[in-house]
Image (tube, rainbow, N blue to C red; front, top):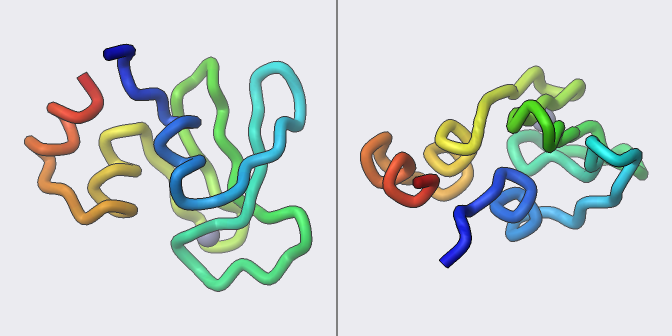
Length: 80
Ligand SMILES: [Zn+2]
């Protein structure tokens, strides 16, 4: 099984649109994002997400813990 990417994990929770070769954008799942394009960005080359609406930020492990309610150990295992 290929390693899970942050973009793939985030795409399970929100519709992501490609902004450029390294960036995806969508609605944030961590706050009530009513903007049309969304304030949630995934930087594929950095492997981090950022929300300019609520300030959420983190890597794949952090995303899985927060979005899917996993423990750190579970998230690390899932991200491996
Ligand atoms: Zn947000």
